[in-house]
Structures are given as structure tokens and as C-alpha cells.
Image 1 (cartoon, rainbow, N blue to C red):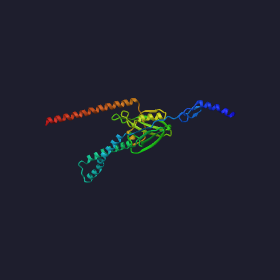
Image 2 (cartoon, rainbow, N blue to C red; image 1 turned 30 degrees about the vertical axis):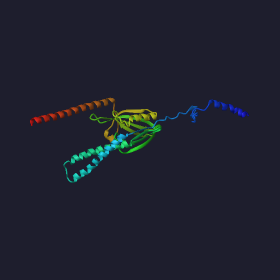
Image 3 (cartoon, helix red, strand yellow; image 1 turned 90 degrees about the horizontal axis):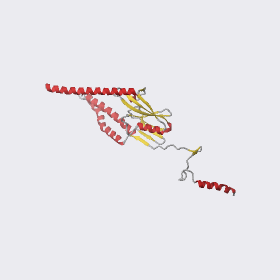
Image 4 (cartoon, rainbow, N blue to C red; image 1 turned 45 degrees about the vertical axis):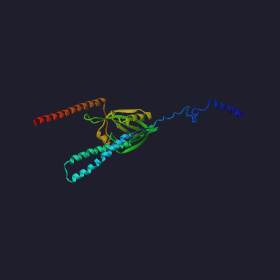
Length: 279
């Protein structure tokens, strides 16, 4: 009897307080640790970055259009050389070399458009990136699955190739994991970024999800042949004053080149005029 009387008030108090937070709709309340609600992880939306359908279609069409011409040049050269037909053979060889270079670059870009893919998931980033280092990807690709809590740093830097004649500025972004792996996301031109693969935006979103900041390592000078061949070389840091001097030197070179071309055009016109008068 006394037992029922002791338990009744507690039951009435529980009824007066009502259901616990989160149980009104049938869901369990928050897990409590040390008297405080346990923080739930941020739910990030899934975002996919890859080449668009227009780029894939256009590259496939151009490759299929040029492939028969590129494949026919080798048999034509073989026939001419075996029959000792030298007239026009050199020109055909130069054309074949140029077309071969163009086809190689187109096939590389087509493979990148079809396979390169970056997926920002809720807990990890999924990557399918070219194995070769450099601004021009090759045909081998590798897949990665990197949880955000395993990302130690997201780094970016500007890389300068060439000299005053033809300087090229590219910005590189990469991920550094806690295990020491360095995964290059990609390279892009700051003045002409890729809309489908905005590496700068992707790097900042990965850093935001990993709860770190993007580290900018400034500007370094790189050798183009090392980058294209995937070789590891020393990177020389460049101050902003040197970059400005490089731009000024390139502007002077371009002005001189324009003057030389204008002088050649003027010389050709005057030569035709004097030859016409003499005739």
C-alpha cells in the first residue's frame, strides 16, 4: 500500500512534465554526456564536380572526326618512302607530326573529361585524379577516398613557368593527409578558371568541411620540362617584385615583336610596290 503511495507522485510529476525533448514525435532525445547534449556532426550536402556533357560530346566528336586522317598518314608516308616519291613527302611528314601532337592532346583532354571526378560527400571526399603530376594530365587515373578528419592541410600556390618571352602562371591546389600523402587536385589559370572544375572553390569547400584554412604558399618558379615529365624538382620562391619585372619584360618583348612584324609587313608591301613600278 505504502509502495503504491510512494510511486504515484513520481508518476504524476512525469506526466506533468510531459515527454522529453525530441520524444514528442516518436524520436529519441539527444544523447547526454556529462550533463550536456552531445554535438551532432554537421551534415554536408553532396556535391559532384566533373566535366559537363557538352565538353565530353565536343571532344568525342573532334577526336572521331580527326582520327581517320591521323591514321591514314602513316600508310601514305610508308607508300611514298618505299616508292621513292620525295615530292611532298617532307610536307606530309610535318603535317603528320603536327596532327599527331594535336591528336595526343585531344585524347588526353577527352580522357580527363570522361574520368576526372571530384565528389564532396557528407563525411569524406572521393577523388578520381590523373596519376601524372603537372598541368597536362595523362591517361592513368587513381581513385582516393579521404575522410575530412584525416585531412591535415589544403595548400595552394602559384607556379611560374618560362621567362620574359612566354611566361605562364598556373595555380596548383593539393591535399595533405595526416598519413603524409600529398594529393594534387589540379592546376588552373587564375585569369581563365574552369567552370566545371573550379579547383579554388573546391579547395576552400574541402577546407571548410575539414575545419581548417587554405594555406597559400605564395609564388614559386618551376621548370616546364620537369612538370610535363612528372619529375620532382626544386621550387624557387619568387617575390612579387620579380613577378612584376617579369610582366614588364614580357610586355617589352611583345611590343618589340609587334614592331618587327609591322616592319616586315611594311617591307613586303613596299617591295611589291617597287617591283610593280619596275615592271
